[in-house]
Image (tube, rainbow, N blue to C red; front, top):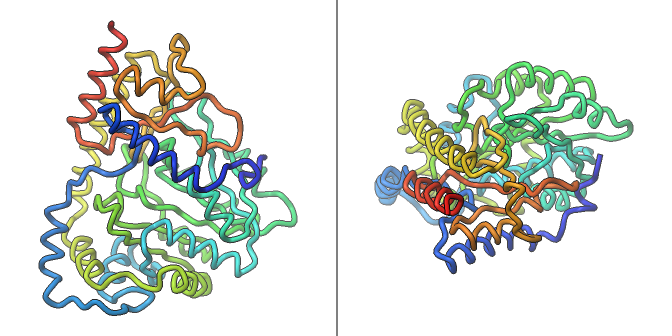
Length: 382
């Protein structure tokens, strides 16, 4: 296994690639599929909730753990018996606070699946943990967990390990099935690990079961980080949460206090309203719309000769350009200039040498997906 802390570039480069690709998309009037910014399908609901909350809102400190109303709304997402949530400034901060809390409790290694969300290595560096990764199997039509490789990594002696799992997974779209979750639970117990679930794509599964939250949380060796960014299409609101066993939750809450202290009262009031008013049926309709966009994009990429990995969830399609297209050392730039479609290069999502995978977001509007499909097909048909 390879330590990502030794092979990943500076965090400024990780952040910069998103900004660079978006700037290039604007410069070339390209369809920007490089960023995971969700389609703003709940803006009207957010405006209504903010307007309703404003007369009673205040602009001073709120409780570090969050307002009672929002904490109750978040707890309702996870069912009876779930730990009391702590409200954070986005899911990324929830992950940072959890890892800092676990580091204080003596955990020294964090393991995740590769390719991995490019911010993860920076979070590990903040905590002083060693970061290691287990490759997702990308040899088939869709991503698969390799339980044997995961077991081998978690069984390394002399380490106290946190397993950070993102399902649906960014960027592969891997969705763990019931048997895989059972295997994860068994491995965590066998090797004295702590499981952290990055739950930000929780409502975007296109098949496969939901995470067995109650069963995992009941072990006392699991925590969940989530947020409004994806499910409620509010990436800029920076509202997240964590649920963890009492000891970890208190340490994570202390870390959150030092990172951002608290979230604004107005935003918490609005989020509490939205979480209770937007029901599961509405969330499921949004997911079905995303699945249709996924399938449209998959069809275009396949027709143009890309090798695609079919995601079971999330917002992204991973694809390798066809071998007969030579786009030099930066395939994403070549693709953008030739087709007017902007994808994200995945160099910062891997710790090992890999195929030239690109990540295409279908979190944009259906019209933008359709335009990208037309541009791709037009380029290949000329």
